[in-house]
Amino acid sequence: MAKLTRRNFVKAAGAASALPLLGRPAFAQEKLKVGFVFLGPIGDYGWTWAHNQGRLMIDEQLGDKVETLYVENVAEDASAIPVMRDLAQQGCKLIFTTSYGYMDQTIQVASEFPDVMFEHCTGFKRADNVSTYNSKFHEGRAVLGTIAGKMSASGVLGYLGSYKVPEVVLGVNSFALSAQKQNPDAVVKLVMIDSWFDPPKEAAATETLINLGCDIVTTHTDSPGPLQILEQRGLYGFGQGADMSAFAPHAHLTAIEDYWGPYYVQRAQDVLDGTWTSEDTWDGFKEGTVRIAPYNEALPEDVRALADAVQQGYKDGTYDIFTGPIYDQEGTLKVADGEIMPLSDLAVIDWYVKGVQSAS
Image 1 (spheres, helix red, strand yellow):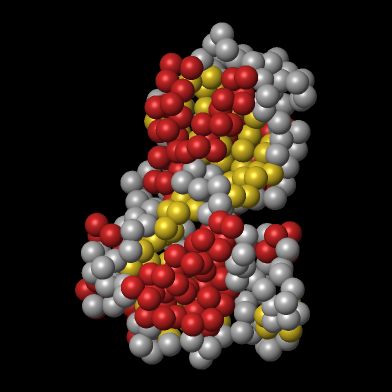
Image 2 (tube, helix red, strand yellow):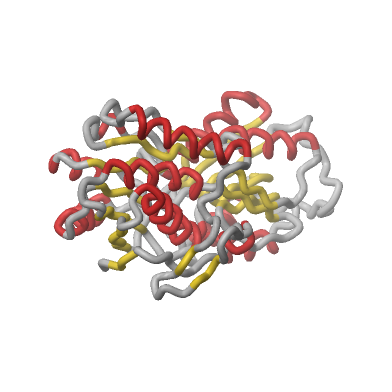
């Protein structure tokens, strides 16, 4: 494994000759270099930490067949392009770009290196050498919303978001609908901070939500900072991307855990075998990509049972929180009674459900 930074790249000499886009050759006789582009630091204990655990699983399970490299703290702007190029020039034949904001940059660099396979996380643009992969985080949000709707004394819940992208909008809506299933009067106060990882900003936004009357706050940002504020205030919340209970043992009710490792190992093995093809993958509870961290002892048995039932329903296909009737913030019917929103609509959703109130 090699750690890189945007300011320190070892340039590879020469350009690799192009490989055909179909029927890719196996790499059995040489070590496969696998690159990762990370949004935040691997020590954020959230999103990037979880992706890095997947990278480590490649090292562990594929051993001397592979070498993994990573660059952390890469902004979701044009500065990501030279990072991706450098990984390709260093000989990486498989590159994972692990955040939505890398989508156009991934497509551009992939067009320059047709012999390199790219995997973009949470996006929707593909090419012959670009796959997309995602996790059904909204299934996990349904569990968190169920717990929050049942546990909140005020019925006023907080949601700390990063950007208004489909992943976050989908999470807000899943959380709100699930809370309202337990408490029809529940409302969700929403604050967006325009950042995935900014502990001071996350902490300040959490204080804002608390001041607005929220007694439970869920986060769609990457640090444990919000939970530490909730711990200090004697309130409850949820971790994001990983079990964050060590940072807030009282406040942390549970968390969505992102489990990328098996997917990363399989895709690297596909390149080694010469069987890699461009695909779109969106897995959830059923496939094990979404997990729920151990429950806080504060959760009553009936709440645990409800949360477990949501998980099981997603695993066996008997439950979907996006079953109508569903109304938007203005009260317009968006999903008819008994209908289920298709995944294609969920993947691009840009509107909030009734009961979501913007506080930023």
